[in-house]
Image (tube, rainbow, N blue to C red; front, top):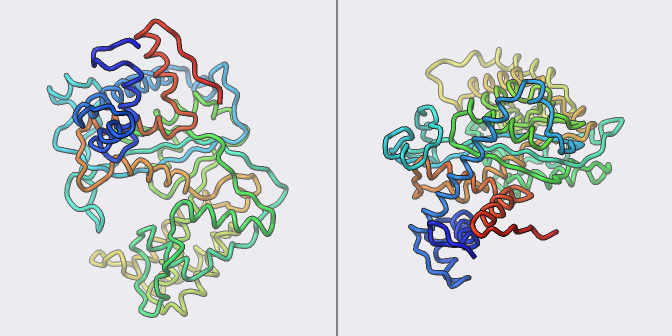
Length: 439
């Protein structure tokens, strides 16, 4: 089978890396190998093999990004010669969280172990109800999808789906999104036991909404992911290089979707300005709900929310902005000493959010063009990364985090990005070329 310096054949390395990446931890990967393959490799060895292969994949990735950046600008917005552009290309980016130990890239020990590009120094993320401590850092996730949908001559769903004006669902959505901006109203409905606002729930709501009018939101055909601990300015070229390799810049229809985070739209302006920018509808909904119910009894605030979110769904955001501005005058401007749950602060946040992103909220046009209006796809991807790298008991070195993020991106992509890597590795070790079986 061919033996490399790790004394494991490429095929066994493949199994070790799979167990180390897909399990919840390296000890779990070691246990899985023993149980399913009768292969006894301790957790530390699983960690070393997995991270070494991950670092090699990072080196290949960084070389591809560097080569892309050396292309003339015109070619960077083109495609590789053999690639057929998709009919609909969609890009989404978001950030997750993981804990990083005190070691930093650039120290003599880490530089000798893995000569990867060091990220800029980052301040710890602010603590919140879920993330205590000073070790939390942000990882960046990019999702590149080809999707299937139909272009229509009118908005196929002009009326807002009932689920988005269902009090129990919306209270749960606001809680699940952890906006912490929803007004605390004494007579608000009790929190329901069902319908959590997971990405899967949001997609189900849209599918159900489309059935009565024969509207089918876009369906995912393929997805490719990229992930890194490097800072946002370095992350942008990662996503752009991947998009170029897939022919996205020559797709017939192009969309970029995300929440209101400034980093998302800086990346869009620099690398994807030709793509239609779309603000995630669910995040807009959470701001509208928080502002509508701020400082009001729920019985008074709910009808206001229903009116406002109906306008947002129909692309009439300017009408919401007018009423929000009037409400701000009634309440007064927020004071520096006021917390984020104060009514004046909630209204000001919603007003600024809608004003800043009004140009990305043309939802009727997006539905008519068969484009997505929610970022649940990339949020679901972040959740899948978190399942492996995030945990109060998990602390990574920068090198280990980068390696695992890259491997996780490889395994979550469809088709799997590691197939060619393992075939090449097997050929080098044995002198024999292997071929992937046809699906």
